[in-house]
Image (cartoon, rainbow, N blue to C red; front, side, top):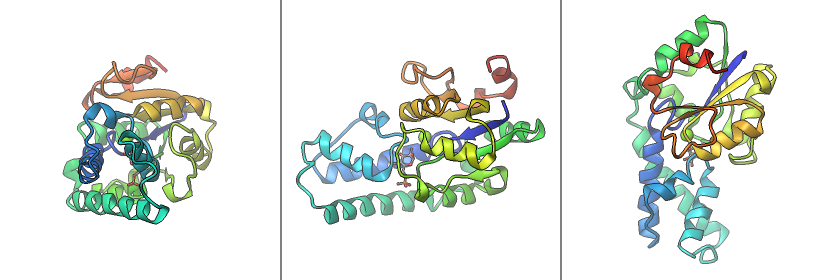
Length: 216
Ligand code: G6P
Ligand code: MG
């Protein structure tokens, strides 16, 4: 293995919770309440595709014009941006800074594969821009996870063969994307949800290079 490619939301910091709260509020405004189990299917999925999935859940996929959908997505993002405006380095998930340091010292390349258009802002607020050799610009990615595009772009930018990359994800769609890219998949979260991952750590505090090296 030569490179580690991280998802952002739910792996580096707990913004997955803020995405959930912002979508949930929009869903309730639209008369489409949903629970955490449905939210699992939104994790890692782009803004426009997430909105489509919520509208489909409520049987309202034909109720809005393209312009109206655009406004709904903007409304969700404004809510999300108000949450992330307060993020600091105190919001980096436990163990992540140590793990990034371990990887750098061991000579691995480090990338980020996030589908979020807010990824640069969040990473900057966490004070972690320097920790990554490359962050894929979500604006250049056409296909949402589970498509492998974002992971393949990260590997290409790092100049590493996908087979020599480890991807780290908290989303079911993300684990699929990692495997479709031909990479080793590390899941962060519930092993009963991330059943396809090659190895699962229940939280980031348990993630260490030592534990991974015996498996990859
Ligand atoms: C990540 C998150 C998703 C989010 C997507 C788009 O993949 O896991 O929950 O919908 O990014 O984020 P954005 O900030 O562009 O709306
Ligand atoms: Mg995620």
